[in-house]
Length: 186
Image (cartoon, rainbow, N blue to C red; front, side, top):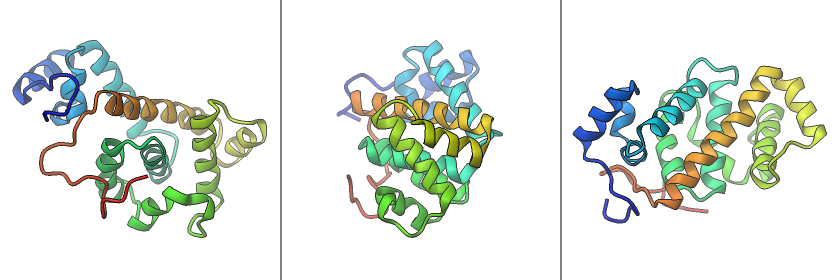
């Protein structure tokens, strides 16, 4: 934890602050929130946003995880890629092949139209900050209005997480291997 550009709260202190602001307790165990909890209101707001997108959202869970993994890969966020590597497979129905293919999805034959539309939207939002009209129309047709709003919000939210973890050099939690499955990085 010595590489982090700011102090990481001790675990018990992070849990106490998280409890005080009403955050999900498990989030306080993550290094990103152990840093963010120096700013409790900001940590709570980010936590609430992520929870709203992770659970009970409009966008299919598997598609959302592909979105997150694409952001992690594209932004070079080891923290984001590594955190969601396990979560995507164990909780949200992604295969290892799904996750590996997001790295070069444009040249992959693994994905269907829904995945390709989603990943094209992620890339457009990351590079240009907006959805071109034709791509927005495809998203609306494939996913519907609410899921398209959620898609754009999710890209912004996890791009924020990637920016924070990269900018502050927030390390992975102890005992977690970098860039699964084999250490390959962008």
